Structure formats: C-alpha cells, structure tokens
Image (tube, rainbow, N blue to C red; front, side, top):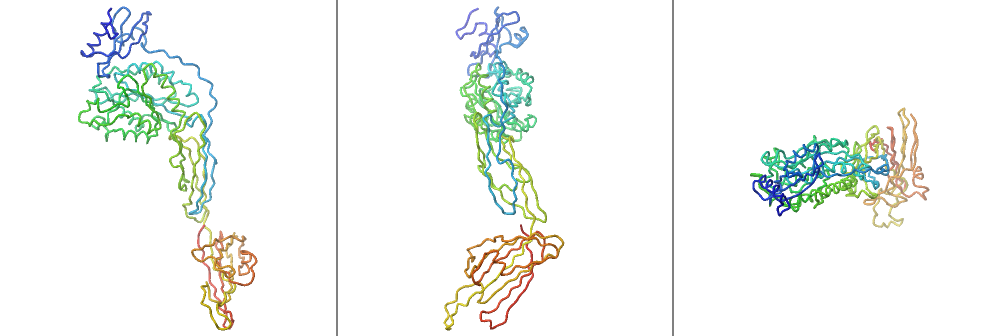
Amino acid sequence: MTTASNGMPDSVLHHLTEALGGATPVLTSTIEDRLADGSLVRRYTAHAEGVPNTTVAVALSASGELLDPAAADRRAGRRLFVPDFEVGDLPHVPPKEPVTIDPRRNDWTLDKCDRVSEKITVTVPPTGVAAKADVYLLADTTGSMQPVLDAVIAGSEAILSHPGLAAYDVAWGVGNYRDFPIPLSSSYAFQHQLSPTANHVPVTAAIDTWTALDGEGLDLPEGQFFALHQLATNPSIGWRTDSKRIVVWFGDAPGHDPICTDLSGLGAALTEASVTADLTGAEITVVAVSTTTGLPDALDGDPVANSADYGSCPIEGSPGQATRIATATNGSHTSGVDPDAIVGVLGPLIASAVASTGNVSLVPTGDTAQFVESITPAGGYGPLKGDEEHVLTFEVSWLGTKSCQNEPQVYTGTIDVVADGVVVAAKKVRVTVPACRYHYSVEMVCGTWPDPGHGDGHREPETCGPVVPGEYATAVTIYNPFTCTANIVKAFAPLVLEGKVIGREPETQPAKPFAKLELRKHEATMDDCCSLDEALGERGGDRLVFGVLDIVSDQPLRVTATHTARSLDRATGIGITSRDIAATRAP
C-alpha cells in the first residue's frame, strides 16, 4: 500500500477524489478505532479544495479494504471513530444560597399624590442566581463539521455532567441546522430534536444522531439565523417558564443575511438585526463557539464573500455576526476551537453561562405596580460574574395614584427580582389608600387690627392688612347629629400671627395638628379664639391672629362658623354673621 504526498494512501486518495467529482481532496481529519475482531481501522475525512462543506469520508481496514463509514460501524457493531471521555464522580456541592431582597416586604399608606422613596438591596450569592437553566445545544451539521460532531457525540456525557453544573437544575435541549434552499442545498434548515429535559438519556441519544455527511453544501454561509429565530419564537421548543435560557451554538461558517421569505416561508425576511431582537426579546443568552473546521473566522466570517446559492435573495451582512449576537444577549463568543478541544471548551463555557448573570433588575407586579413611579437604575445591573457576591442597590419611588373613596382601598402585589428573565426573589407589597374624610375648613379671625392713623389727626400712608381696623372674634360649633362616634383631628395654619403677616403669597404655612377628640352621637363642642392658645401657645396681648382651622372627621358633622366684628372706637354697632361650613371629601 503506497502513500501519497498528502499523507493519504493512494487507494484512499483515489476514492476521495472520485467521490468529490475529481476535485482535489484536502484532508481534514484522520481517526483510528478497532473492529469487533480487534483489527485497526482508520477513517479519512476530506473536503474539496476551496469548498469546506463538500465533505466525504472513507474507512480503511488493516487489510487495505475500503469501507463506507456506516459499513464499518455495522461490522464493528457500534459507532466507530468517536473518542473516549471519562466522566468522573461529581463533587459534593453545598446547598445553593438564595438571592435575597431587603426589606422583605412593604406596607405603604398612600393618599393621592403622596410620594415616598425607599432603598432596596438585592444580594446575589457567589453561586449566582439561576437555580434552573435550560441549555439548548445547537450544532452546525453541514459537511465540514463532522470531526467536531464526532467529538461532541463522544464527550456528550462529560459535557452534561460537568462539575460546574452540579448545583443547578439544568435541562438540555438539542437541535441542529443546515441551510436553504431545500432540498437543493440540504434536507432541512433547522431540526428541533429535543425540548429541554433533565434526563440525559434522550439528550445523548439526540446528539448521537448528528452527522455532517448530508447534501452538497452549495456555498459556505449557513442557515443559522432561521434556527435562532425558531428557538426564540416557536413555542414548540419547550423552554421551561421559570428557567434561564441559554443557546450553545457551535459551527464554522457565518449565516446568510438576509434569509428571504421565499426560502423560509416566514412572513418577513430574517436578518442579523431581527434575529438579535428575537433573542433579546425571549431573554436568551447565546454562547457561540467557532470551530477551526471551516472558514478562518468561522461564525464571525464574511457572509458576503462566499455566498452563492440564495437565488434572488440579496447578499448582505457583515463579518462579526456571532460576536455581536453574543454581546447583545450577554453571552460570549469563543473562537479557534479545534475538534479535539471542543468538549473541554463547551463544558466550562456552559457552566460559566449558567452561573453568571446577564442582568438583574426589579420588576413590580400585581395591583401595586401602578404605584411605582420609578426604579433606579431602570435597566438593572449586569453582566455579573458567577463566582463572587454582588450587593446591588436600587432606589424605588412610590407615588399615590388613587383618589380616596368611602372605604379604604387595599392593593397587593410584589417587587420581583428578575435575573435573565427568571424571578429569583420577591417581596410582598401592600398599599392602602385611606378612606376619604370630611374636612371642614374655617377662617379664624381673632384679635385687633390697629388703625394706622395717629391721635393728632395725622395719618401715615396706609399699610396693607388682611382686614380693616377693628376688633374680631370667631366661634366654630361642631355638632354630631348622627349615631356613630366621630373621630376628629383639628389642625391650624396661621397666616397672620401676633399682628404680623407670615402667610402672604408666595409664603405658605402648613396646617399643624393640635388636638384630637371623639364626638359621640348628639354631642357638640366649640372652637373659638381662646382655643388658638392650644394651637399656638400663650399669646401676649390681643394682636390679630388670622388663619385656617381644619376640622377633619371620619364621620359627617354639622359645623357652623360665627364671626363678630366692631370698630376700634366702638362708636358703631357690632357686626355678627353665621354660616354653615360645607364638608370637602379628601384624604
């Protein structure tokens, strides 16, 4: 048996050249195994020069017999040419610490337009936030990928059982992609094989079916955008609703951009931008791996330079697809991975993606969400490493948005800690809008406002005053004509104090509570100028006090105000007025 200069025996070279239609074969991999009788068998895989997707393979027995790889498998009674990977015992994993939120609950009382703010602290433990993760293995199964697929098939259990995943509830989905047009280029563009499951048996069985010896591969870019679109939008993929979603995408060529509707059958063309929006909208993290079996830049390669078989569909796009998509989804892109290194690369990458967190944010839910005015930072925090503790501080502003009614209104909900689309912690929130009360607001005028004139008949220019010169008094009667006891709070806002104006616009004064009382059925009470001492303290002299008395009750009342006035020289009669005070319904 003679050997050609390219390292292939002549018989193998001739066979592969003929299988490639006379094209010069470029050897991509050589791997050995043993048949059932213990004899050595070697498989040679090659592609046509300049066309990595046009891949063929042949097996050569120790006796020099050429065998189709499938025939070699049948003779051996098992699948040949896959390396062995040992899966060690999983380490002991301590219980996973939970994500915490502090304070753990809120009970707010908010009248309309009330505004309060609080600081919320979220603590993410070193083990990360995702107790559950769905990992979908998406492989390019076009011609040039066979050595990579063989390695993943052989090392699938080592990937699934990586020690870094032991602390997590991980479910695995499986699928693969090829290209359009169908069937001219491939038998399908995307094959969804298995929805996420924690059972490794069907996962390894699905991976075992991967083969790259299909179709002619008319050009180099592939149809991965169709696969990624399906993973993000098709409910049949079966993502668990409460799991972090990760797509592990490995291949050796960029994607066609765009994929037109006449090829995909969809309602709109697929582009890098649209697929990126699909993935981010579905909160999927993409872990991309470029292998060395195809174009030099693999998934980041130029989709224009090597595109030829999409008919009237425009040839567009730019290099760097995988890097941009991974960055947009808080994932990663690893390039330059050889077939013999793929298993060792995938395990840690997946474990890191599961443990790390792309984004942590606060999301209000339920009936109390309407009271959340703002959350800062609005976009949350991330990405966060999974091997260290993170203490995240949020500022939440609450705003009363509901008008009071006859009865208190109680709203319930939560503030959720959402990590990569999954709720990982929450606190209960209750907001109470108090019932409307009855406000009886009365102007109180008490004391003397002097005449600016002098006794000698000379008058200074008049100063501005709230009332004309004179003596004033106010009495307010409060009567409960109903059978329910009224709980009353009284407040006073002074605008003129001891003859000095302190509340003329733009100055303002608050109404400060100064007394509480219960008024049982058919009882009455009164406030007058002497009552202001309770609100203002001892006053020296009888200089004018002018302000607003607010009588606030949880029951309706009968309130009247009586104002008395006379001139300073007392030469004229006394003026007296009385009126009912209408209630204002307010908090």
